[in-house]
Image (cartoon, rainbow, N blue to C red; front, side, top):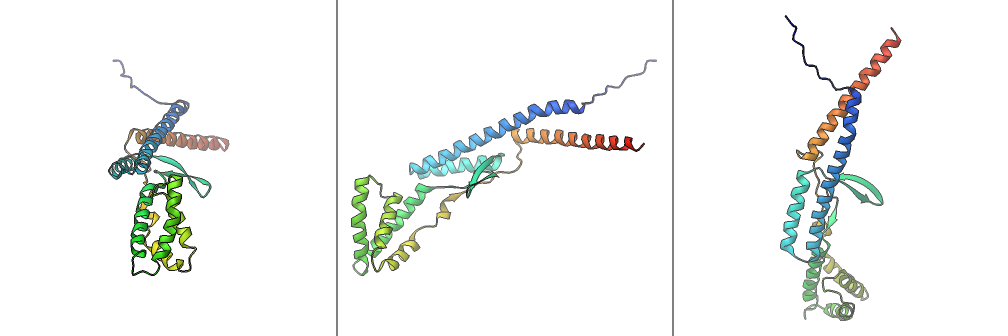
Length: 223
């Protein structure tokens, strides 16, 4: 009787290395794709913020958060002049939303400080008389940061400025309320994640085979 042959399939280490090279290229391409998608969604958030469209802003933020939380997003951010690799969007600010909130706080402060019962009302009115014409001449919006800075500068010129400045600063919202930084998982069950998993397994197999080969070579030296 004929002996039944067994099908034996073995991938050699050099073959694994050949497979690893295109896998690394695919991994880099997929990571770049996810990063570009995140950047597009983040730009949509900033565009909605600049357009002062709060409804669109909330929708864009939700899309950005959902994508970042469910994908592997590697990003390079600047940290005090140092480039740092992070998983996620990195910190960004809703600048225009903050300026709108700060301007609303200034208007509220103006209503309070310009009241008849407030002895410092004339200081705020004087500062407003200087800054509002500048805003009109310069084409500034009333929620422009340059108008806010002008008001603070003019108020500081008066003897009672400290009291007024304290009231205004207390009414201004914290910038941290308008700071966003969404972190992504180190691994996610996506195409990018599974490709990285396969790549990692191959690298581990190659590493283990390399260790075994070194051990065998060293053992032969002492036989």
